Length: 129
Image: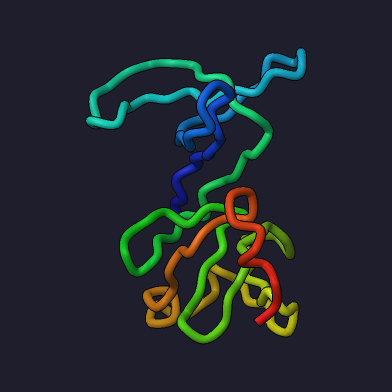
């Protein structure tokens, strides 16, 4: 199965999230190579980011938003944090009581997920259910 390799990071100068291809110059600077701007025009731009870097899971939520590592999602019952582990992306209940392989969930369960934040911008959502 093909999965788009994409990363998200916060811009160094304005705290906005951007998506693209992650790279580092080896001097402690991190960058996202952006290939489309907000109007979906083709651009090639290397934008410096802070170290809040997340990889795209290849899965979208019920509102067609890309789910990234470190996102906080809910199925309406349990709140989960998305992380990488066990050889793939996993959903772990905020209260640590459940853990599922994100890519192993049935389609109907994937379609019930909704992004409600991420651990960088919304740490208060990580308080147990």
